[in-house]
Image (cartoon, rainbow, N blue to C red; front, side, top):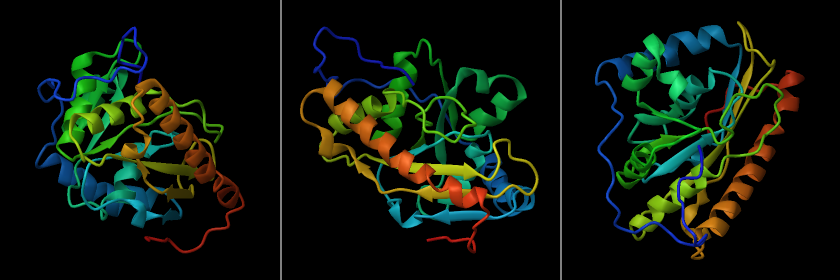
Length: 252
């Protein structure tokens, strides 16, 4: 994600009733349920050792949310739905992914499972406004705030676009109630293979409305800072995984 507002006034917000581009993502009515079913009950349980999930109660059952996980492996895109599927009435997730991940056969699946591309170097207003539209429709949007995969288990500098996107959506409708949910995903080894243990820790929601002071540059910086701190705390679980100090799988 990149910054996507350009103005001589760093505190200027986008118009509250700005027009949103047409839908650029969709969810296949047959492929999506099949993929989630196979992933949840076959692929993930068979591939991984123990899958530990905590903090599911932190995910609101309704309303617009952005799931903001750390990014440690390509498996993350499957583990996020696995950990959150039972928490939302609207189960179809929409993923903002890099344009490279929407090429070829992989891209065919990504686009039909709710993914839509963003050019991280030159993001289009159309694509970014689509993210706002999804939140206005009270959908669940998944954005990896670090941007890329990092194997060192450290939380790297977050991209500011996720905060600006959330602020834009919140300012477009009074009382919309956008929330950002930090999620720490940690593996027992940097390159997950068969039998790897994984921990998914879901943090407390960040209420975007609490940060709206009137200056989008300042507000986005504050959200990004607090999101980074939350992800850092959730990433401390790595020590438990490395030492294989796993309890039974927790779904609470």
